[in-house]
Image (cartoon, rainbow, N blue to C red):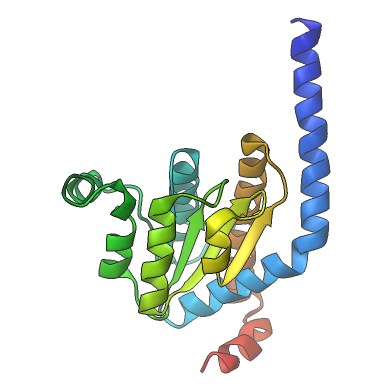
Length: 206
C-alpha cells in the first residue's frame, strides 16, 4: 500500500466523521420531525415512495426494503415502494415519454393524499425527481428531499429538505444513507415502542 493510498483513506475518514458529527448535531430535531411524519403517514394507512438515480436509486431500494421487511425490531411489514425497480414500467415510460417522466407518472398512478414521496439526489437537480415532486404536490403528497450542497432546484419543491452541506458526492451519500437508517429506526420507535409519544402528531393530522 502506498502512502498516497493511506492518506486518501484517512482523509476521507476524517472528513466523513467531521461531516457526520456536524450534520447530526445540527439536524437531530429535523430528522426526528421527519420520522414522526413517516410514522403518522403509516399509521393512517399511507405509504412511503422513494426515488433516485444511480447510487440514489440503490438507496431508494435499500430504504424501501427496510420498511417492507424490517429494520432492527420484529414488527409488521410497512408499506413502502421504490419507484426505481420495475423495469417494464421504467422502460415503457422512458420509451414513450422520456426518462424525465419515469417517476412522475408512477406518482400519478400510485400516490395518494396521505402518502409521502422521498426524492434522493446529491445535486438536487435531477429532472425526473423534480417532475415527481411536482406530481406529488398536485396529488397532495408530502415531499421530502434528501439533497446536498444547497438542495438545487429541488429545494423549493420540498415540504421538508434534508440537505447535507457538502460538495463531495460520496460523503453526501454516506450521510444520506445514515439519515435513512435513522428514519427507519425512529419510525419503528414511534409506531411500536412509544406510540403514546406520537399521539399529539396523530391528533394534529386529523
